[in-house]
Image (cartoon, rainbow, N blue to C red; front, side):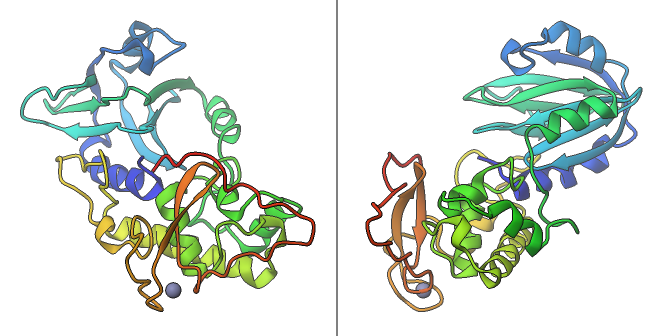
Length: 291
Ligand SMILES: [Zn+2]
């Protein structure tokens, strides 16, 4: 699933092609994409709209359109945006023709991606505020802010990091990479992290996300650039998907465990296991891995 660095990569690649252009024609082939709005209504709103800016919020690609309209795209599991593909790719859901003759195609085999059209900055703010917490790589992403969010939380720190309503944009790949960089075991209860832990976690998240953006995203499944090329961050993973391989820092074999239903990769020497409290039962290890 595309996470913050993958969506940011797409935003940076698309922005020069879209900024200042007008959408000449929109064809939405899948009513699920705009649900509960009708595809015809959204097509009519998009037609003739100018793209003023392309922004990102968490994993959302935010189209800032003329007349205070906003198109909020979420790629979910398998969504891809292709600029001027040679032929119509299979699983095409949306076609956007620009006034300069170029075409943007949204492809999504599993059809979980969405496109919501909103009117006005207030509606956009309300929509995103209801879904997203603090944005990493911004000045408000501070150790103190993170620590306050985690206070009293018994959930494993990995589940905390994955919760979009607390930290926006971090998914399974970058959570594993950030926790490894921070030297924090994914099963440690968020509320029991020390101030020093939170400082290292903040740094780990920033470093992992920045490295992902630098490598133009990770293509472990469907993620592709707008020209169909693959990102390269999968070649830079320190622990994610490296079960059985040596830890790059200490050589200990990396283990795969399950945290909150997600496949999780950890070096238990660099990331010491939480000590069980007397009388407490092991928690949050149950469930089936999704990846
Ligand atoms: Zn290690």
